[in-house]
Length: 415
Ligand code: C6P
Image 1 (tube, rainbow, N blue to C red):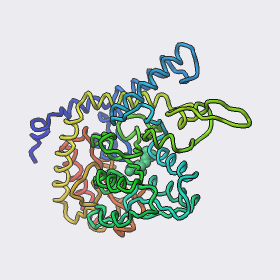
Image 2 (image 1 turned 180 degrees about the vertical axis):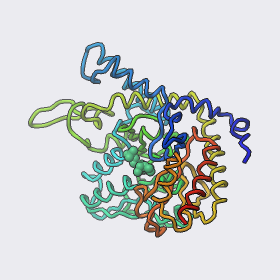
Image 3 (image 1 turned 120 degrees about the vertical axis):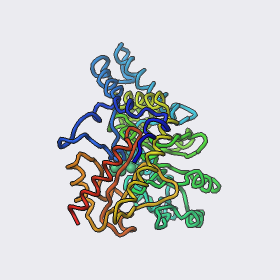
Image 4 (image 1 turned 135 degrees about the vertical axis):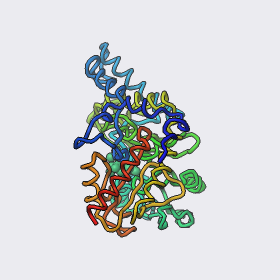
């Protein structure tokens, strides 16, 4: 196919962007790396790698704890990262940005603290059928501890939420709604605006799992108005082991602390401990300082590259990939939502996803295979797993062609 769109219609200079990511220049099994596992983790631009290294080389020190020079520089850099994150999602206050280990910890923080007094027997929590395990299991545990019930919004065969069912579920027992913005397996973009509006009509707080949305969509928390929003740094070109929980001041003040230890205290005696203010109340222990700095730089890099350009290119690439993959004999898409982003899951004839994944790997093409931590979705579609290609802005149409040719080659060997 003609790849003129690579250069002309997309105002993003993809070839230039690719130079910013050193790993994209490497080979795998003697072939140029084609990286389509961005849903699992994205690659890091050199500026992020350099910023992390600079912290360790030049001002490694603990934060908020020392009056000495290095500690002050580290604290400033750490708090600057919070400012950048707050600006990126348009939080009303920097203290509404809590630093965590990632999406999983952010959701666990909310579910665990809600189970300590807020959720009670007879209450219910709503999640959806397309949640990642990280937005299922913490709520199951919270329900077990509190005696609340877990309810699940069903989906249709295209992998879209059945909104009428959701509306019908919203009764007086519901004390929390926690749903994913974008499905990591299906690529479905959920109507989170409607989900939040309907919940708010009954004063129910909402948590949005934005792990697969933050890197593809613009999120303005003051416009969207979730009470909580969680995402991971490593899926938005930042370091692993780091992430964000956004929460409104009201709700973060309402919830008890999650973990006890350094930084989250104001005063400690054996009789009683008083807790620190936001955001420190939820940041016990020495944090991943380099992670925060790296995430801040990653977000600045995206803003510098241009979010509009990135999103336009990703849309074109996604349409091209769907159209090209459709030409493969025997392909079945798992998830065919009208509104989608990021992940494209598929199966070809009855080929096991692992076999397909292995043969693609031999051609230097990295995709993810398996249940993608969404086992209930696999049960719904009655499949063992999928092959998942998750695209992002440094991918090219040539790489999509390689994937399509690779899948055809693998299929011809396996059938
Ligand atoms: N999904 C994937 O390949 P952590 O591991 O905490 O950074 O993110 C957990 C998580 C939560 N919600 C969603 C929607 C996710 O996609 C993920 C991570 C990866 O799909 C690893 S399983």
